[in-house]
Image (cartoon, one colour):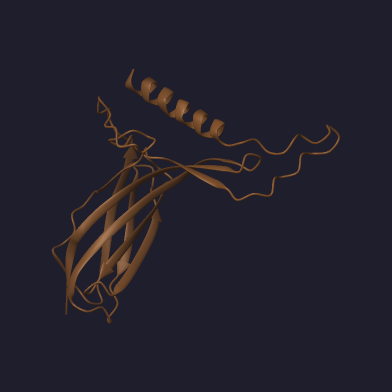
Length: 178
């Protein structure tokens, strides 16, 4: 029952997002295919992904080491899909989200170095993302942020792209030491 309600909500959000985009120029005659409109794509985001660390990070990492973020991505998120901040009244069971692009950004060494890594979730919704700490990073606190993103629909005729997204925030995730 919960899955049916969630599926109906997502379908309604997807349909309303497509309805908000104005249609392309009038259709070409039936003999010729309609030309693609000349416009920039409008991105629409459905906040449907829940992102969390599957394995905890160590408290400290040495310069030159690689930090491996083991991230688990699942559906649905804990808030409404349109990102309005409305909590869901019922927390449904989460299911793994395979095939999701996951990126991690780390600000390390007294906030003067940005490091990044990325991966794609497997069948269990888990991605292992390595981020190497180069030798030039100064010791200090490191914070990390993650973005999970999956293409849901792309409509070139209406200039619309719909994404599923979710985020992970890890302020002061670990310390970098020499």
